[in-house]
Amino acid sequence: MARKQPPAATWSRPQTRAKIEDVAREARVSSATVSRVLNHPAIVRPELRDKVARAIAKLAYTRDSAGRALKSGRMRTIGAIVPTLGFSIFAAGIEALQNRLSEAGYTLLIANAQYDKQRELQEMRSLLERGIDGVAPVGGSHSPELRALIQQAGVPVITTYVSKASGGMPAIGIDNEAATRELTRYLLGLGHVSFGIIANVPPSNDRSRARLEGAQKTLAQAGIDLKPTQIIKADHSLAQGRGAFRQLITDHPEVTAMICTTDTLAIGAMAEARKLAFKVPQSLSITGFDDIELAAQLDPPLTTISVPAGEIGRGAADYLINAISGLSIPKSIQLPYRLIMRGSTAAPPSRTRKNSVAKAVKNR
Image 1: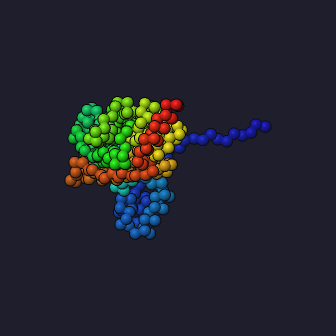
Image 2 (image 1 turned 30 degrees about the horizontal axis):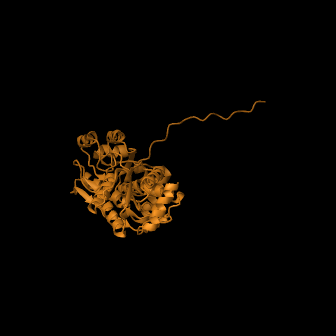
Image 3 (image 1 turned 135 degrees about the vertical axis):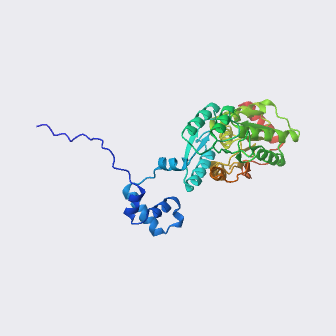
């Protein structure tokens, strides 16, 4: 006898969506109380908040964002475009941005431009088509088409991780050039005169270009002009940092200090130094930029510049919220950076030590 098959699952239309009045009735409070719990929970007594929260959970209530947008003329949505979410410096800024926006009742939409200006333009157009109320891209290096698109849309904008307004776009971040100037002066103060630089400088990365310029200008003022082969341009990856270190130390074994424009490149350089039996900082010093979490956990810990990603994210959120509300806003906001001196830097080795290092490189 054939086994009876269970009936096939069928799709059924969902029940009528719960309204705020339904939540109020379930919690035995007024609709105004439910509204206060949703929009200003801090001013509602804990016991009332708990009752409303239980009613919301029971009824699976969600706010009607589309209806609210029609009434107010705003979507209460902010867009952010970052080069990548693969690096913690951007992830930390996005998390802080989202947390502050959430506190004010805004939703964050995130796009990834992959260090590509055309991709950034495409993502910006997509965000604007979704009716965002404001937008926070990264850096000041954008295509003219993107600037025109934002201007035509008429939404508030603030660019992040740089401190100077550019092309009419306000900014919040650090002075990248000044930070690397200070870092380079620190290395000069230790006694270094033989330098190499590993830099991530694609056309869209004005932050890293400013860091490179800061190092070059400071060295030139000290009477040290780098040869083109002492500056290795690399993509932002550990593997590129390793390869750049090998190339730099092979072409210039006299180098005693390497300045990397990101921590990722510096970590790659340190890994290759260890593989080639170079002792850091006894044989040479290596520095980074960003102060990602891993930088302090290396052996030795990495000397770097700390970028306040969390402050940048929160500040960008406050700026956009105030701009949307019509409040007075600054043209640009410069935040402080910090030079973090750790174990990857020290005074340069003696001449005898330098000669032995050069010989070792030649024999590899």
